Image 1 (cartoon, rainbow, N blue to C red):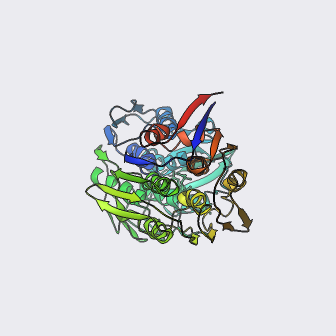
Image 2 (cartoon, helix red, strand yellow):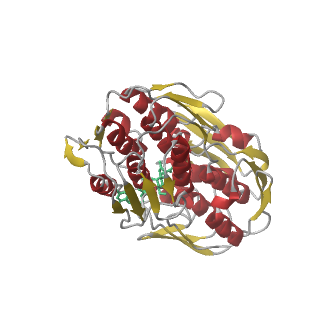
Image 3 (cartoon, rainbow, N blue to C red):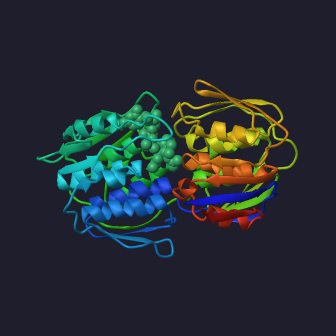
Length: 422
Ligand code: EPZ
């Protein structure tokens, strides 16, 4: 098991390249099930979750090669075992989004219900509701979702809204099922996340007929078949947002390349409010911060609102602001595993229901802390960059799930992070 040893405080200064978006690559890997043959996905980062998804597809019968120069080759000519095994899905919930494509291609699927999750309750009832509306017959058996569509799927009007608004992977699942369904499907309250638009653009390149991309109303005219493609995924806005916060928390200067600012408006709005300067450049931006950090309130919402996947990182930043802030989590109300760990580093955070009151302070102090999930570990890393003394983060396998070579990238701009085996 690896740990990170971080010496702080440091000031970051330099250039970082943003990797491809994990949350776009995963559903696009599932989409290759729909198009028998050889597809190539480009700009794919080396992440644990992507290797696990490759294992999942291989288990279905596909031939998945290792990532070479950012290119991932997937041959889905054969999909002869439509089973998503518990042993794989318990490691990565996103595997659930093979359900829709398997139903569309094989007219049957057996996929493990995803297990528990550190960030809170994560049901898949809306996924199943949407697939049932397309004509699938679904029941649960021994922890598995058993789904069948003997006569194929049939288009329908589907409302996919839930108690916390839209669902990202739920939209992906139903969208991928609908592209090969007979007739027209209209998805209302679809997720508008850029990763879903990237998936829809990839499906259209495969020969699908989707309109309304980027809006909460997706219209899909079913087609008879899809063809394999070469597709380049978008840059990772959550990784970019994490590095923007890293520049701010160290009063540094970072040039971020391969990132799009047009899908980060809510993030830039909050960071600008805190006093961070973000200037667009040719293919990214320059992030600088000097002087005190200003307090700001943050409420997470579905896109285009502020992303829940940056809530923890901004909380670490606001712990050093000159005043009080309120962070409200509206997507995963229990997503506060990082609070107690940041308090171990002398942050002053108090949880009250879906809110955390952040009393800004003068400084953070290095301490041994434990990562509990992907974005929490990123927040602890940022805090370690600004903290006085040594911070030890254990269970960094969480961070390897979603950040490619994060310590190498940060060390190249002035951080002092060592990865050690324990
Ligand atoms: C995606 O998860 C992302 N994962 C998450 O990122 C991200 O936090 C989340 O969207 C929200 O933006 C991937 O893309 C692989 P949801 P997803 O369905 O699709 C409730 C990261 O760090 N809900 O949009 O699983 C649900 O409980 C990960 O990269 C239902 O009630 O999230 C939650 O409260 C973590 N029933 C809300 O909707 C359902 O059937 C939004 O969840 C589905 C969801």
